[in-house]
Image 1: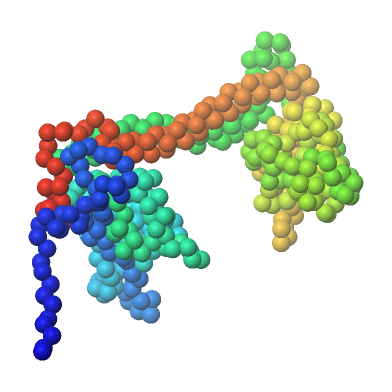
Image 2 (image 1 turned 180 degrees about the vertical axis):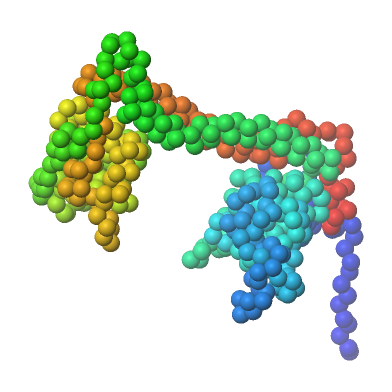
Length: 443
C-alpha cells in the first residue's frame, strides 16, 4: 500500500497567537493586564550584517553608510558611519532601513544605536527592523533587562557572540500601540531634562583643567595677590626669575627595595596629572618591586622625569620609596609654593621642551636645574599658597559634585527605562484594547 503524504495544516489565528505569546510561567516580570509578553522575532525582522568583499576596492568610497559597532556610540541619533560604500558595494550589502535598531552582538554585546538613515552594517551587528513603533523598540533594547538577555544567550568562545536566532528569542513586553507612543514621549521628555543637567555638569568637569591653568597663571604673574600687595604696601619688584637649582635641590638616593618591603611605594601611575593628587598606592612588597628605587622623605616633592608621565608631581608627608623614574626634590624655601609652580603651564612647557630626545624622552637633572622659576618674597609665596589651597579645594569639590551628577544621571536613565517597560511611568490606559490584538495583526 502506498504511503500517504503528510499534509501541513495551516495554523489557526488562535494557534499562531498562542505560539507568539510567552507562557505565564516563563514571563520575566509582571506587566499591565492589557500588555502581553512575546519575543523579538514576532515584533521585528532581525538581519545580521555582512561586509562586502574587500577584494573589490570599488565597493567602497561612495556615499552609502556602512555602520560598525563604534558608530553606535551616538545611540539615539546614528546617521554618520566610519566607512561608506559605493553603489556597487551597496548592491552586495544587506540594506537596513531607517528607524531600525542596530545591536552589537559580537564583543561589545548590547551596545545599540537608532539608525536615522538607511544603511548597511558589518557582521558584528544584528539589526531589528520594527513592525510597530521603532523608538519603543530602540528604548527597550537599551534596558539592562534586554542586554542581560543577550549576555545570557551569548556563546562563550574567544569573543562573546549572540547570533540572530538567539536575539530573536529574547523576551519582549508589548503594550497597545498608543501606549507605546506615550512611553516614548515620557522617556524622551525625562531624558531631555536629564541631558540638560548632564550638559551643565559635564561643562564643569571639562572646564576644570582650563580654570586650574588660568588660576595658576594668575598666581605666578602676581595677579592673584595684587590686592594683597596693595593692602600691605608690598612691591611688585619682589617678583623675579631664577633657575630651578637656586630654589630646589634634586636628590638621588637609590636603595635596594629588598631592605624596605613594608615601605610605601610611589610610582608615576599613582599620581593624577595636572592636579598633583596622590592616588591609591601600595607597599614595596605588594607591588613586587625588584629594581633600585629612590628613598624619599616627608616634606619632599616627587617629580616624574620620563614620558609619558613627564611632570607628574606631588608633595609627600611620609617616608618611602619612589620609582627610579622620579626625582625626590627638596625646596629651599616654601615647598608647597614650588609644587604649585611645577603644576603650572609655564613650568610644564619648559620641562617638555627641555627633555632629552631619545627613544623614551626624559628630562635629566642638568636640564631640570636650568628651568626658570618665577619667585617672589616668602611672605607672598605663603599668601599665594593660602589662596590656591582655598580655590582648588572649592574647585575639586565642584568637580567631584559634577562627576557624581553625571554618574547619577546614567543611573536615573536606567531606572526610567526599567520602569517604562514595566508600565510604571503612569502612562498606561487600562481601558485600551489588549496588545494581543496588535500581536494578531503582525504575526
